Amino acid sequence: MDSSFFSDEYLRICERTAVGESRAGYPESARMPVRERLVRCFWFDQDFATDDLRTADGRKLRVLSPGWWNLEAGPDFRNAVVRLANEPIVKGDVELHVDASAWYGHGHHEDPAYNSVILHVALRNDSGEPAVCNAAGQNVPQFILEPYLTAAVGELAEAVNPEDYPETSDSSTGLCNAAIREKAVDGHWLGMFFDYAGDQRALARMRRWEHLFDTIGGEAAIQCGVMEALGFKKNKSQFALLARLAPPAKLKEIAAGCSPEEKRLRIEAALFGLSGLLEKEAKTDPDEEAAAYIESTRARWEELKGRFVDGGMDARQWVFTGSRPVNFPTRRIAAAAAFLSEHVERGLLNALLSCLPPETGQLRQKDVTAARKRLERLFTAAEGSCFWRTRCTFVGKRMARPVGLVGKDRAALLLVNVVVPALLLYARRNNDANLEHLLHSMYVKLPRLPRTSVETAMVQRIFAGDEQAARIISNARRQQGLYQIFKDFCEKDDRGCRRCALLAELNKE
Image (cartoon, rainbow, N blue to C red; front, side, top):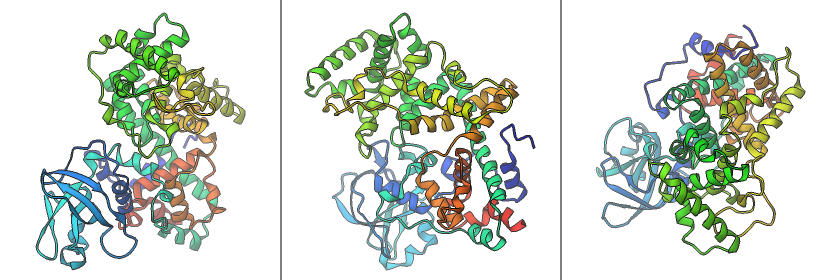
């Protein structure tokens, strides 16, 4: 195999060991295994994109309190408070599952301990039934989570941090750990497996980009990817919608002939106007600086809004709760405006390509470091004296000192999640082997990204928490490999190990 290119070897291993299957026609949560604990986290966070929640039988649902996380036997959440349609408020317990059918699979319909359940919550309704039945013969309404989540299941899974939840010891050791110890598998073999899985993750992302490129074009797809990545888990879909409402061609048009500062301010005005946040926040009482900024932004939006004929968003779509103020959607919209004002006229694809080092044979580490710094500047350098460097909302207090709109860690994630797969698609569509070689060399040499909860769980599962052994995960490519294995196998407690390609390969050794 030519190590200069992204390899499909991981996919071939999965097919060879008969653990892979084609799931292209199913919704995401059906294509990926999901752990029940993750569903509890979704419920605990109340991570929903709308207030218009409906039970499986069509009744309007209001969740006044999700309840408290039960660490003992019995239903998952105690003392929840809900209201169905116009019925009286009800207080009781909530039981959660990945699949609705698990209510019967786990025997809850025969267990009086679950007669206190007032709502059965499942990620997906594989049974198609509007309700479940308890041991007393009463129907228990069901609420299906997936249609209401703020982002795709996989994206939300990566953002879950176990330390944020009452129970932190859920990570178990997998059968792969026993096989590694029994067979004394060397680190080189494991490293290669993670390399293959890391390549597969980049290729999977590239393939997901293909539809976007074909439907809205490369420039709009790149803008959408960058803005989604700026949105964090709670506002990804909102940023994707905002990107579609303000396509690059339109932003290029309104920025034409302006000074760099005016370009940024006009694009800010367009994005804030379309987001609905400008009108909402401007109704409150700002200080003098904020009042001047709001007034000038509204004036620019009044001039520009006639060019955006598709309308805008409702401010209520944006989620501020659960985020640090410096990560509020307002600051992220300002970050998007800074990036776009700097690069939309010359083209976002050209901006990405300009950050890569020239093809000069063997890529050196200093070339990768220099490219990474150029990419960081690509996303951070256009902030200038931006109002938002010292503000989190239109009317909040000034921060004591300026804070960058995009940090180095977020820029590095943009590189892995957006830049590499987008340029890889460009390279393959243009039969540009040199560009793919360059991208792969860069991907291989990228240092580790900040650790996530997924990586922490996988270190426990594969290495039994042995940090020394986990040093095999020495770069971003292998981290991505961990995530790929997690998505394919480790999220599902009851089936993951039986299907696992890593375990199957270890058992061959």
